[in-house]
Image 1: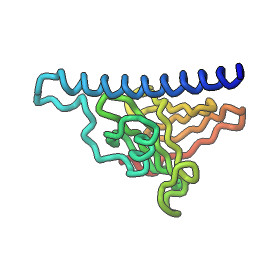
Image 2: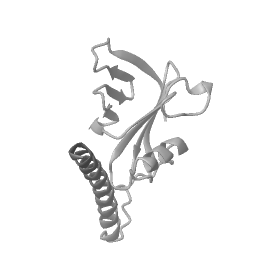
Image 3: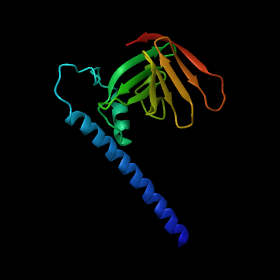
Image 4: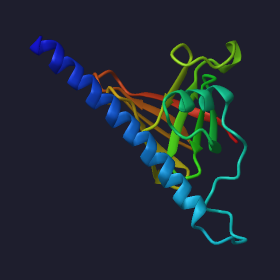
Length: 161
């Protein structure tokens, strides 16, 4: 009986935390858009093309903002495509697709979506997976630094869009 009570308490706390975070993100987004004075400078919000549909669906399913716009995109020499997306509040997201010429983007199969992304410099971004693996993407290359100690994987960029 005590174990069940503890287990249910943990579940309740987790759900409450997740709902609170989701609410906080929505409030932050509405405060930013609702309190701004109209201006002709629209550079604060991304104006690029929408990110891939699969990326938007994934963000939405995780309770993240789904107003994602592409601010950076590369295609590597081994046909990996990486998009850096930005929501209306300025948060960054990483989406990659390996072997992009062999079918549609599918998360967990040939796609990887990450929400822990930082801008490291002009056109350089660092994305970190839950397991600690880090992805550095810029105009020259895509580097994958594996958390388990495997050798760093480097792919050269063929094209920047």
